[in-house]
Image (cartoon, rainbow, N blue to C red; front, side, top):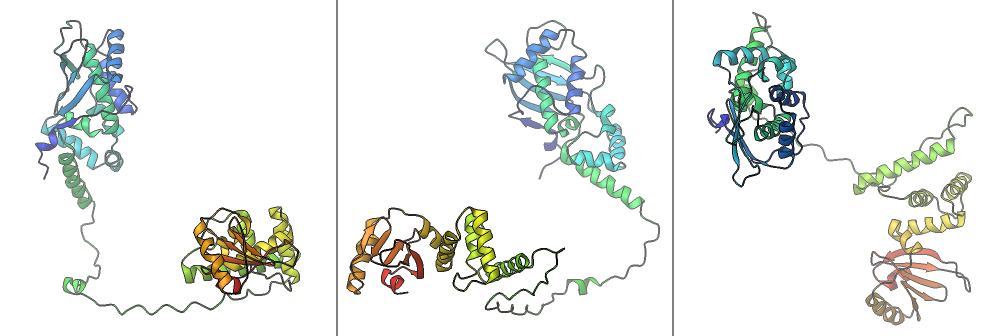
Length: 401
């Protein structure tokens, strides 16, 4: 538990970088010291000390900021800035003013100095008094006190409660007092006679209730439904495009419902086009499907044959199957060393290896990066391979479909 006494002493081992104050109250703090200085050169050297990190840990207590500042000698100088703390009566008046002003209270809670308190809490003319143990006998502030002033201004930028601590009150103590005063103001603003709201007895309100279990979720449909027919209208969007959009949305919704994954998450433009085309098998394409293939091929810069082949691969196994179609790579020798004898033992003949592919006449197996085998077939004497069947970890199973 933090007591009022503990709350009235704060030590900052590190101070935000930069010598120039950012907030308006930080700049006003610096101006209070610069107004009493008649030596711009001292202030410039003080800024240099502040920027150079010559100011060690800064301790703030009511009415005083103390730090050791390293100068040209090995031993640092004890430097302090004195600002008169408020008496209890002054604090009571100030806190009443803040508690009664929502804007001032809100600014303080946002760690800003309320504009309405600027003339009260910021140093007035001659209030900020510097002291230093250095031998500089000129008119204050010396360069060490100036350096501490610039460092303290950066502290005030970050936390204006440092300024209020200088005036005599710690943050926790101050906020607790403001809370009490604000509640008192709110109570005074309530009408004399409270409205007669219906109440609930405490025993009834606190009685444990057991809610019935939620009903079991409905089973997911076996397939996405067909969208309604859209009549052709010159002023309306293309009905075929609307049909495709609705069908694809229904298919995505079904996938999300059954797997929890979005089927188009992370797809490239080409992959998404292939996914859309894969909904319509190339055999027996309807007029609408032919239009879809033509438009997707044109949009992706591919031929309709390229798109049809890629769509067949997508139907074979999704994104991984499309990668097996389009990407040749060099797998480790182990899968091939096991696959070729297994195919030979299953009377499937001799397969010639080439990168991630095993080929025998019109049949081919491709090893995907997902460790699955994908089957392909081609016409005799034609190097035009098309996906077929379903992928499998066993090459014989993949080949026989």
